[in-house]
Image 1 (cartoon, rainbow, N blue to C red):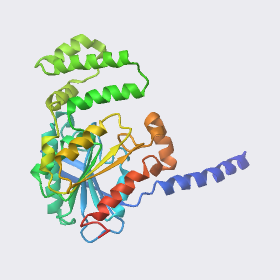
Image 2 (image 1 turned 60 degrees about the vertical axis):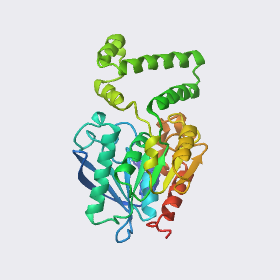
Image 3 (image 1 turned 135 degrees about the vertical axis):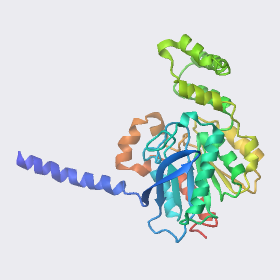
Image 4 (image 1 turned 45 degrees about the horizontal axis):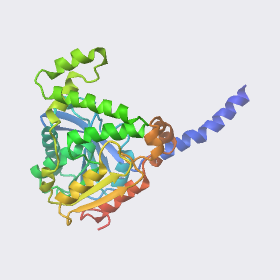
Length: 336
């Protein structure tokens, strides 16, 4: 029995060593607290292992949902890429998540933009970063936030936009149809779901719509009062006009298999609205909304399994390489 135990230990030690090794990302973190958007926000400051005297810094703007600073460590790969290019990263728990005060479901996109502008101001005052080199990274719902940030702080150094949406209602319709089609649902089922959401939209437009929604849905009601409030406050969002506020480089990254956001619409509107001298676009044909490979998009539970042993293999290398190349080309990048 003792011999079996020793054999098991001998087998497990290399596995444990490998897991520790591959999950040792090349950056340094420290906790940070700021007041932004009227809330006390807790978050993470990511620093390169060998940081320049005053590195540039990338402020993260989350997509939808109750995100903590690292998105449950999902950001580690891209943080490492940015750190290797000599950049720091600032990312915060959303209001009401982790140690942050407030409630993210009570925010409008304009509220989120003012919050981000406050974080930019804090980074510029802090003294540890190059105040000229504060840029943005944002994904999905951040597509309605970052254009307003560009209006409030037109001197941001750059913007990295990953799968940003254009119009709230069109995005919802696209997501419903594309996700159901990808899951193999027939046209009748898709049409029924679309009709259901058109009805929900009419209720959202009414002052007492939530009460009627609860009466109609009963125990099947999927939307909480806070979520209803959030959708109602933001469903008129459209990024098109705001894209004209960008006065510094914008790099748009899209996934060809995105069922959340219509990549074709996003690329078309960005190209029509942002001057070609400022805009660069990269489409990763096989990637989904968060730049992961098709296997993980189909079976999300595999992300945790494979991520334990090969965390950098979940997302496409092309995504990280593209971000690295863009940052290296900026005046604050290590490529200069």
